[in-house]
Every structure is written in structure tokens, then in C-alpha cells.
Length: 199
Image 1 (cartoon, rainbow, N blue to C red):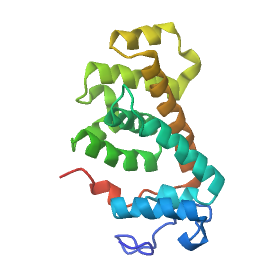
Image 2: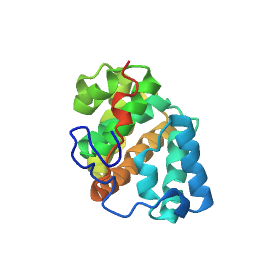
Image 3: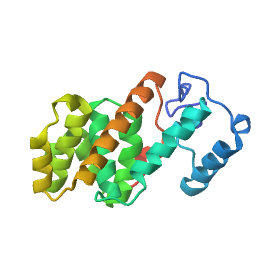
Image 4: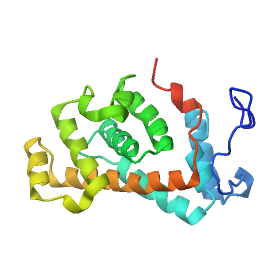
């Protein structure tokens, strides 16, 4: 599949309804980041190109993303991806379910987990601790105004610290922003994501 032609031979839809700059139009720091991602993964995830439309927001978005998703935490990187997939599914964000589903399969070393979490995390083959984590993440994503001490007590019972709870809330909240912007932008997931981590 090329950028111009989809598998069925029809024109490939654009990756965003907003303008997508070419690499040579971008500030040096953003171009370098995108090229580094391309070298590591073999392709450029569309989110990088789509968000490059606004360089200052690109920098802020990825700085916060990295602070949440790449740091040392009481949550594993796979668990953070579970939060992204579950909440993005609830928010009907195709891009994040597909892209982070691929990352979850790789980080969990499990080809089934992403589909299970996206469809219904309560039926997924995950631990009781992870289910409690996702219950809270979904509450933050869908009805944060209802969070109370009972939620903290339930998470403490599974060994989560208050700092872990902040991390769960941070990931769910950040991807609420990401989901909404991706939907407004009509951002399309790269074809490469669909097969990653499945074999």
C-alpha cells in the first residue's frame, strides 16, 4: 500500500484533515525526532506528521507523552499501554486503539491482549490488579468528577501507591486529549501497526 493508493485500489484518505507539513519544512529539532523514530521503527507513525502542523504543540505533546509513558513507574510500560488501549476504545479513537494496541502487543509479548482489552477489558486475560487499574482509568476517562476515596482504597488494596494512582490518572487524562484531537483531525493509523506484535 502506498500513500496514494489503498489496498482496494481506491485513493488513500489523507492522514489528517489539517495540513501535513513535509519533513523539509519542519524545525530542525522536530525533523530530527521524526527521523529518529523512522530509523527505530522503520516508518513514521502518522501522529508525528499530523501534529507537526503546530510545532509548539508538537513539542509540548511529546514532552508530556514521554514524561508519562517512558519514565520509571510502579506501572509497567505494558500496563500504561493497557490504559491507553482501554480508554481509547471507550473514546472511540481508531488511531490510538490501533497504534497503541500494536505497542501493547509488543511490550506485553502477547499477540492477543490488545484485542481483548479494546473489546472488553473486563473479559481480558489480565490480573485482578490490572483490572482494578483499568476500572480506575475508565472512571478518570469517562467520569472523573465521581472519583473519591473509595477508588483510592480499592487501588491501595491491590498494592498501588498514590504515585501510581497519579500515573494511572495522568495516562488516562493525557490520552483523553489525544483521543479527542485524533478524532477531530480524522487521523488515520499507519497500515504497519495492524500486523505488529501478532506473530
